[in-house]
Length: 153
Image (tube, rainbow, N blue to C red; front, side, top):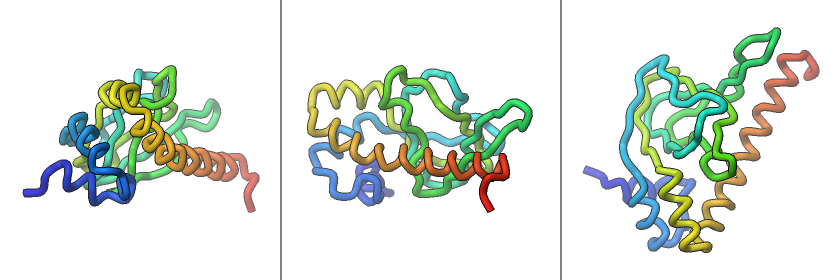
């Protein structure tokens, strides 16, 4: 049986992270699962965790008046779900709906924020990694909005 530490250490998001940081992160981790159609979180709710998807698919969605629900991006096994736990006011910016049953590792954002305050090197490492995730989500949102409003050829 693989441990949480092994799973996290093998994931590209955590690649190259010093072992001491990984041990801290594992202390904030737990296994979770969600069924098809389940809402993991909703826009505006308090954001206190993020997920490493191990199996399944999750749709990131936003509601647009006059258009309805727009899927911004679909995340699969290996993807990271959630960055709002890192940036005040710690509120979700999208809805996350399970498309196919999900097994994931949940990482407690409150626990990690405390650990980052204690160890700024850890905080900087996580911030650099999440900056890439945030950029990817913003780009996906931009492309979807261009499609919805017919601005992309």
